[in-house]
Image 1 (tube, chains in turn red, blue):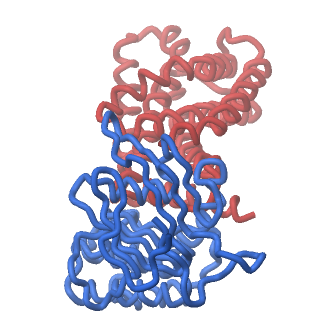
Image 2 (image 1 turned 180 degrees about the vertical axis):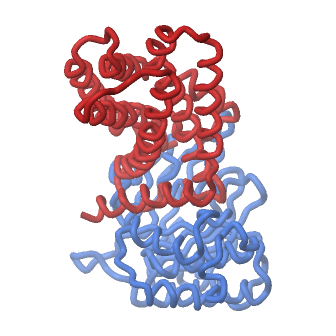
Length: 226
Length: 240
């Protein structure tokens, strides 16, 4: 019970920090907006090309925004030795991981849920029906979960490195490919493309989420204990 | 080196010699290529107040971080209250409170929020009254709802001391607790540490401060060449 309270306290703290500092928000909102606009200009006026590109562009924007959000989550902890302090409290390392992961997940989910309608509108890709909208929301939430599990571990791994901004995406992008692939395909199916049955992709996404969650939570103490 | 129990130090279940608060045997720790701790042997009985001195880079912070389970020993055996620091780190952590040299607070939270957070994560059910009392004790009532990013260095140190008071762990580890404090703040640290010892807490602090007249440590240790040696001790504190 106290471990759960610690998890919630850490997640709440991370979200409150972000709400006040807006350090990640400013960077991610500008970045995602710029990505969507630049890609729309780059892809030209042909409607079919824009529609087909919408799922990929949406997830590319979300993935890069997620890197910034995860890195910022640990950056705030490094100030004034707060991470050192946090890791001296008598809670399992997995609880610290879970708290930070939940905050990143919540942040990315909200960002993705705001971004999805903007991207589909901008790229002229229609999502028809309440069920399709709900499934798109589920795809965003599951994709954000998988990404957050990996990003939290790798952000902790690179937190103390000088070149962390450059290293974080280099190290984690190869690992995050299955999550992005499944999320893009599920989104493509929902936007009327050729992604195949959406249920299959969502199940695959859920499977990867669970595997990555267990692995990353188990490895976290190796990353933070020196 | 043994800083032995005296007075009312708690005995173990069998009524014999009390389990040391800190027990180190041949502890070695490297930082990069440097071997900072070169075989530390040390026993500190519960309820002792020990000052750790040493020049810059002598390993004081490394030793405190190792005791706080933030660093693992590369060789040797380290125990806190009988708990192995590597194999039973979580149990050891439940007995330790660290005040690091940077204060360890979150700049974007208020002083009050920082203390509430610490109590929530540490699993100590502290109420609002106890948080307010800790803030009042260190003279931060007026700044309780101010973001820590607007605190001075001395105020951050006071907030760290308030966290130590609030959590009141069995072993207090303090890294340069006097740094950035005014004279009144330094006296406050002395009083709080002396009171903590009076409650049976073990206190181990690393400091460059000389001649703290309000503090009467049971022993002063010096870290030289990665090893501990006794610089001064109260009578009957040093064991065989």
